[in-house]
Amino acid sequence: MKFLSMVLLIAAVGASAAPACAASLPPTGAASCSGCHGASAAAVPRITGRDAGEILTLIAAFRDGSRPATVMGRIAKGYSDDELRPIAAWLAGQK
Amino acid sequence: MSRRYRTTRRAFVGGAAASLALARPSFAQASANVVVIGGGFGGASCARALKWLAPKLQVTLLEPNKTFTACPFSNDVIGGFRAIEAQRFGYDKIAAAGITVAAQAATGVDVQGRTVTLADGSSLRYDRLVLSPGIDLRFDALPGYDEAAVEVMPHAWKAGEQTLLLRRQLEAMDDGGLVVMSVPANPYRCPPGPYERACLIAYYLKAKKPRSKLIVLDAKDAFSKQRLFQNAWTELYPGMIEWVSLSQGGKVTSVDPSTKTFVTEFGKHTAQVANVIPPQKAGRIAALAGAADASGWCAIDPVTFESKTAPNVHVIGDACIAGGMPKSAFSANAQAKACAAAVATLLAGGAPAAPKLINTCYSLAAPDYGFSVAGVYQPKNGLLADVEGAGGTSPVDAPREFRAREAVYAQSWFDTITAEVFG
Ligand SMILES: Cc1cc2nc3c(=O)[nH]c(=O)nc-3n(C[C@H](O)[C@H](O)[C@H](O)COP(=O)(O)OP(=O)(O)OC[C@H]3O[C@@H](n4cnc5c(N)ncnc54)[C@H](O)[C@@H]3O)c2cc1C
Image (cartoon, rainbow over all chains, first blue to last red; front, side, top):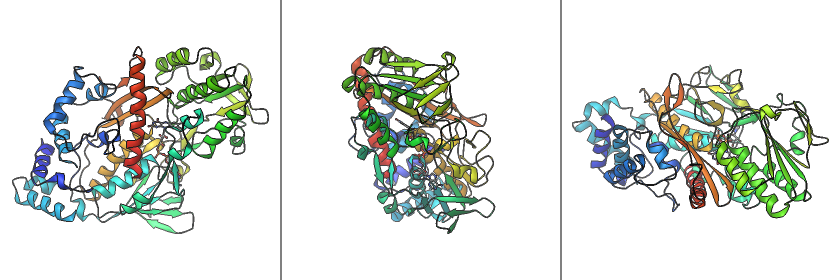
């Protein structure tokens, strides 16, 4: 919860305008995502800047298997909803 | 950036979250020196993440090579369907991010005085030191295998000239020749790498030298993604690859470079092309810094990656003992980011939060046939442990279309991670 409120606060003051600079740490677990989901036009889509609710819905669908996946189903099972909410909010606020 | 940062700080301090803001480390004030040794997947990622998180830190990256040659996908170069140039990355973007890139090897570390000695005799002071030197070969562990032998029986376990040498040897071999590979016991860099290599050597042989054969001499009875690899061998390269496990006598006890012979507990194999993947240890500088233990690898605190034996020294990537996390470029990059957050927090007087990390390792059995193993990890009992219920390998019974998609994702992963690390 601590991270969530801070992330939301940052988002409220326009974190998405931030260039490559971080005033605060990404929430626990968020930093690994960029190993696959980068900014380039790769086959694995970008997730930064996307709506947080949309990110949460997608991960939930990967986790329960309702959305087919190669790898994300296996990874999503390692995260709880409480962990995912701040991650999704943080990703949404990134460029 | 500073304008936005100030806005954010003001919002913190003036808003309802003032107490939270004060509890946070204020990275903008931290102007300490962090030296990172090794500009590979771990070190370059860590240097960039540090500068991104705490722009006022003085970050120095020590790396003797002007160009980095990546190991992931180097097996494709050996298989003959990728150019080595696609594996090479420079440090310009890292320097442009405000990191001092020094083209120097570190030759010593004085942990008490917090200084690193460089190859040119100069030294650097640090507040925190990050080691990501990758691996060194253990020439003491396999009789007959020494620095001269690598020119005859290449390891190709550090990418570059060695990769090209193994490729040239395969090209020069007669159709009907025998290729022999030896694989060490765990732990070593890239657990599925030898078996991917076996696939891609077979891919080349099948197309160009179909009467040839490959023997894999293994010091283990089980390996990463075993079912997936073995199914692919049967499906794609029937009769070409013979895997000799530990219990079948696969452990190599010595080699003779003059005849390209592998001696095992059960017999001898003389090869036309001999690929020795020898036992390994953390890059030499880790031992010089007092961070490596009797195993040759570096024990760390799983929250901060700080060495258990060398204070203010953090070890990431292949060199560290990361519990369930394999020695992969993906792991090194993920650990680098967590380590950067911990170092920035420590330097600002804060307490680092426990990280949660991911690894995904793709392997190709052919250019359009990929599969993966994934895991999620967090600190538990002093190590990085698998989060139960998460991770695992690709399904063993997936259709070819699924394998083709994973091959595309593998390439995508490489493009993304190298862009994140090198610019
Ligand atoms: C054939 C093969 C295939 C692979 N495929 C994959 C894959 O598909 N996916 C994956 O995730 N991983 C893969 N890997 C593993 C991956 O290459 C390593 O895990 C990764 O490179 C580890 O990163 P690192 O930072 O620890 O070391 P490295 O990337 O090796 O970087 C170490 C750097 O430190 C420098 N250095 C060493 N000593 C010093 C010193 N004293 N001073 C200054 N600099 C120094 C070196 O020059 C080097 O540049 C593969 C490996 C191999 C061999």
